[in-house]
Image (tube, rainbow, N blue to C red; front, side, top):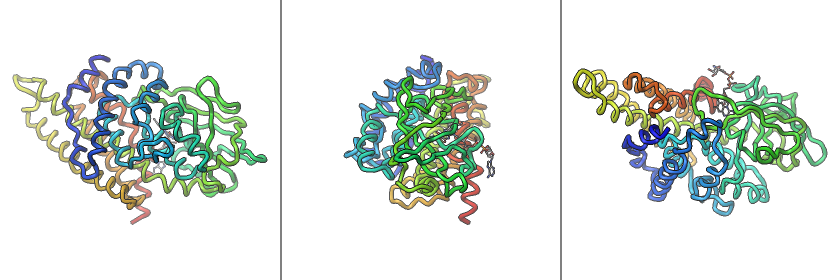
Length: 400
Ligand SMILES: Cc1cc2nc3c(=O)[nH]c(=O)nc-3n(C[C@H](O)[C@H](O)[C@H](O)COP(=O)(O)OP(=O)(O)OC[C@H]3O[C@@H](n4cnc5c(N)ncnc54)[C@H](O)[C@@H]3O)c2cc1C
């Protein structure tokens, strides 16, 4: 793994985002701080985290200490007081470092924002500062063994009982699931209804090993890639949460809340794709200039040059579109269809370009000690989670 660390660090990867219009001086400063943190503190521990299947909680606390968690949550709740641009800068720096173990996008970019938007004042003051310092890790549990894309068909139930809801059901593929102390659960408060029966409830589930009664963690799932990232099954069997943990305070609002938050989630997946796409091109340019075949660098072969010329063009076009989406989102003008376009198109281009770059690496492109192989294995899921790309196309088509 030390070899991998060296290779990630030595590729002289330029941050293209530095030229993006939304990158102000303080966003750039945060990006530099994040890049240094991930390379120095997280990357050397990737192998340890991959072996256990999740990052250790102390890394979360270390990230919180330097201000990498909840950067876009108001300062009064312990956050950084920044904007979505700060979240993107952290995401891109993390993905470029090769240290993807902590799913900060889910914790800070998604879960904290549901709480900031829909939790009560008292709840925000209780949960958000702990999420910002890394002592409380957040997850959002929508997907079930029998239902992913068709979210309105979930079967997890939340039944009102006096001042509490009683939650029963099973979730799978939940990012940060093993470490999470706080889980937003999508559940049916009215099983007779489809989308209108779905609500979001917050559960304080306890630290690993000291779970709240009625809550159980399942397996940490073994994945094709993202070996160091925490993806787990969760089970609820009579888990009681206070009635005020119903986000928004009114039953049946879950789908509407998801619709409001989803553009940001989709843009964060696109941000991961953007960083991976650019990193793939830059690592491959560096590699093919070093590696020789038939007496000259691979980069001198016309096929290599043309392939990389095309991949670099795709990366540039994607960056322009992505930057436009970020600028629109910062101005509160990003519509759901455009966010779906960004998620689908950028992740499709990401996996296409990474695959072409693996080819240009030859056999070394299949070795996990090379960044391009990690980008290949870690990146494939991008077209599936956050809403499968086929679902994105459905949403886009509905807007036409
Ligand atoms: C690593 C990882 C992390 C994840 N993290 C989370 C998390 O934190 N929280 C969470 O709730 N979920 C999470 N998920 C779940 C993820 O969001 C789902 O896997 C995804 O939404 C697809 O659902 P599914 O797997 O049930 O596939 P299905 O819904 O069974 O769909 C399978 C395939 O069918 C096709 N398809 C489905 N519907 C349509 C349609 N209407 N039109 C055309 N084609 C269609 C698509 O190609 C799709 O990929 C994660 C998954 C993974 C693998």
